[in-house]
Length: 378
Image: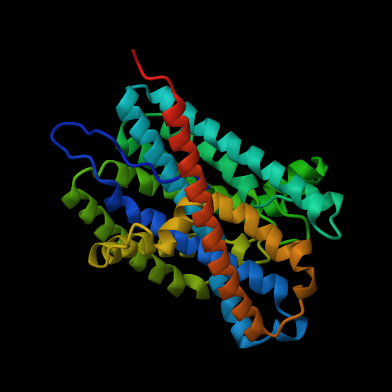
């Protein structure tokens, strides 16, 4: 999504390092963009299948499997946006030496993402058939990503010490997960204006996003980003990713074993329990480590489709939602068997890749023209 979310600011590569550490090359961090590209492909899968599959096929095993896979897109975007928060802030801090300024720059990016979210909802309200005022105020992934980035950047900027940063980020992330069910059950939230309440808990019967637990996923990603940001030698980065792969997989296995335990008090749904957080986050941590080693074994070509999607995630998110759910595809809405809907997804994804590459070429040409027109320094 977004960068989207990078929605999603692109994962920043640290420039410069302390001591004798060598700055990582952009290619060594390609695995983060590749993983974000994977999130884009999964996002398109779910949105197209959700929009175009006919009602009688939505109870099939195939659609149920697609639903499970598609449910990983938003957590991945939030998690990777958190990784980018730490990498971008860390790189800026080393370049300028200004801790507060680095934190403030990433906080501004978070507010920009929230602004994009509001513009996106306005676009959907104006262009989508049957749009309602409630839909205009809907809390979507960008709506929670922006404020979550602000919180993560502020937490990152509390201290220049890695251990303090990690402690603050992990405690806040776990607090978001543990507070989700109590917040959603809190009666006093009903006194808040609906648009404010919806940022804390979704309306009844709506599977919207909310700051709890989604902010926790971004904070967890920021904690991982802190570890990667300080791994500025190849051997150190390899060790960190080995720990991410092994530790994430082990923690996910423990969470799966604990799913048989009684439900968290006050929760009505799996995604309102800590299990949702403590299963998805370790899986994503392990996926990031796995992507690192896969990219080391089979480096992606510079023109890889996954990398292009990773670089253009916010653009793809913005365009594809309107194309999948909007007026241009209206005859396909809830009209196709699951097999034909999947074929439509493949064609749609290839078309979005072509569009993303076209956008990238145009932006590069515009930047080159702007540089050529700039006056040369005296």
